[in-house]
Amino acid sequence: MNISNILKNPEKRKKILTLLLTFFLYAFVITRIFAYYSSSDEVTNRIIGKSIGLELYEPEWDKTGFYLAKKSEPGMTIPKDPYAKNTGNMDEVVRLKLEIRLDESTAKLPAGNAQSDDLLHEATDTERKIAILRSILYDDDKSVFEIEKSGKQTAIGNDIHVKSGDGVSYFIQYQGDNFLIEDATVDGENFDFYFYYIGNNIIGGTSGYEGYTREHTVMEVLAPDEATPKLFNKLVYPIYKKDYLTVFDQKYDINIYAEGILCLDFDEKDIPYTVENFKKIAEQ
Image (cartoon, rainbow, N blue to C red; front, top):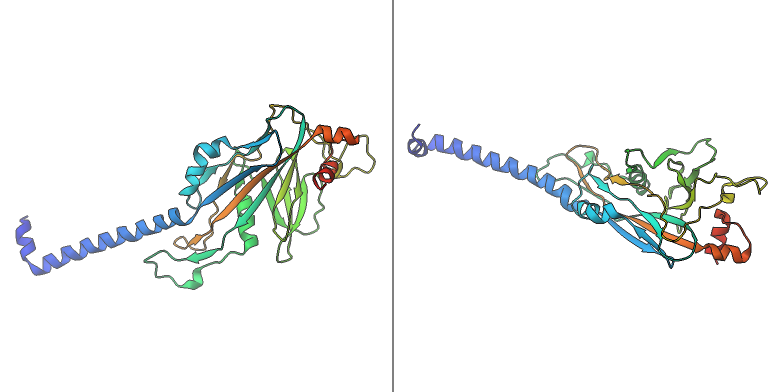
């Protein structure tokens, strides 16, 4: 085939140019879709230690998770593995706090998408926070939280009730060991939690108490150079979309805090290392 003869033919030249333009336009639209996922979705992390001799660590987050989060895409798995370590020289009891903070949610269509706006699904803040909680996983991909709308369930063991900003109650089942979960909602911020490090201690109390409650649970002592187990191991970046071409800008922060109280503070008051007493000392 003689290329020069084809190019001299106006009709054939027009067909070739049309095909080339169609190909490049298609490639541009696909690139824009994936670029939008990368540039608009981001997980950030802030860690603060609130006790002398207590520090928070996230080795896999620091190694790879932080960099993956900067270019995250819906459905991506990101390492995130917080735990606390006693870096002092005295025994402590410890709790961790998990906060979820949302940026403004905006739903958009990628460039070149001709679909109508009524296909967009704008998630509420409660829906977004629940989706984030459900995306927090252990190493074996087991969810840290099971969440249902609250019915007649009775909160026992490591289960609690949480009321959302719109007044709907939810039943939160914490699936992990070593920590006792408590609601830490402040100023209307829903789905914030404390995790009291209890190790293998039984939830509800010891034989020294009558009428056991969750707050009677004895906390595990964290000796110098000892660390808590990891609170969780990873998260799968939530997907908020009704249609596979609909992309959402869903930025949020997962903040982890650690708080420790010296066992000496309990001993001086002659009180046991319970969740109830931790709260009383923390509020002073």
